Image (tube, rainbow, N blue to C red; front, side, top):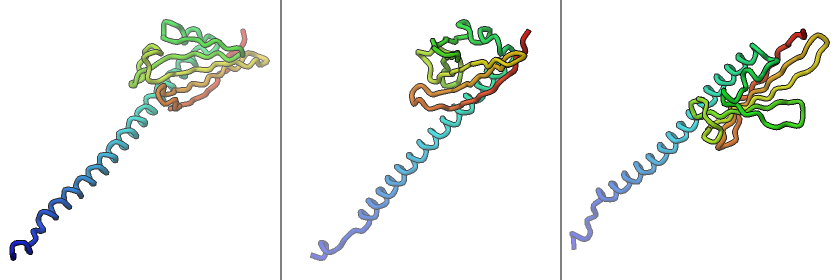
Length: 150
């Protein structure tokens, strides 16, 4: 009889400790996954910004001649547009290296248009870097350059 009245608290304590560690590990895994996702998004924004800035700097060299930069040989495709805006698209992988649009993780889109002025034209460009899977715009930059008439 005395044996049945004795209780061993070690088993209950052990179960509680295992439960505590299991719950703690679930929380920590969620924190690490969230940190990883934030890190990937930050990396994509940084690489996208670098790619967009590089594209804008190259465009500034010949703003009135976009065919020199946005060619099929460089991986760009021009969209059919009804208005005066010309739209060029190219694909990039997760490291912002050029790949075909079908295999791309990100799309770089360049929208170009000009405004006629008295002594030439004002050439404008907007560059967007967008994730293909989530459709989220990572980077959007816009600039303009004046091209004097000849």
